[in-house]
Image (tube, rainbow, N blue to C red; front, side, top):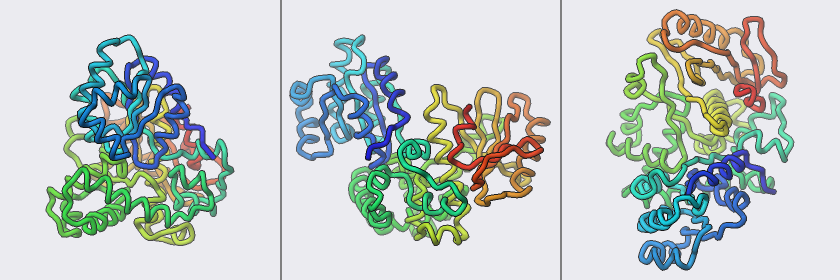
Length: 398
């Protein structure tokens, strides 16, 4: 079973405007499946095969002669020498758009090649795992309050939804092992993959919380510099995302501590040793739920022609809003709760921060207020807070 990816039409539109298109994303996010369906007229070659990568790296001219455009090159980061030759072909006919479609699962080496050789000649997009909206287009989703733990713990790798009988734990165990062996060894000279896996699990425990590299380094038994390098690897390979705090002073956004999120809730649950039944009763369920909801909002936002900016808010008094969606000068406030009926706590925090922003922010103003929880039916509270479940996240962007 293949799922219609919402990014497909956007990629086709962008490819008509640029000579080359670059699509990044984590392994198994569905990049190849999406692109081969969206660009059926392109020849396809994968550099995941060592023999093809060696040919492309050592003899890029001959390689591109054997594989003329229109061409889809998978895992192009394995042949950095190829980028200079792609630039030559692009410059020979700058008006011919969509000739080269490139993918990569390691964004740092990929983007270095793009920046060095294809700057101004390509457009870059990122693909995340399946969204709820994409799954719901083909597969019924149980949005009863009791149905969410199993859904969240399974996660959103396309393979798990194409093959419903595939055991989640076995798939994710293999995924982690393959990821550690293939990507980590190639990006970093990690002395012990066991240390890196322990680091990954310790980071998972902190998903949805402020990132403290010193604590992570101490608990793993590595240096703070190594912790920073390993976090960069996890970012580069699409396993985690850092969410920056919002401040009226733009400079402060770059120096204050971000939150860290594991991108896929199934992978996060696996790293925490949780499945559907155990997630429902776990004290970590709030963190997993927040990571899941933030990921769904991020996916939906990325589909917009002009995506908004995503932040979180925390002031010196400890008041916090899980997510701010910034569009122009307007900041929508989003709070995330595991409960089916959240009560007054979440709405009270939204009201307090809305009041503070209205009084002290000279350039931005608070917009709508949202509360994302496990309610089966959306409704609007008397104070104007709109209460939704994650399947209705598209309403935030309406």
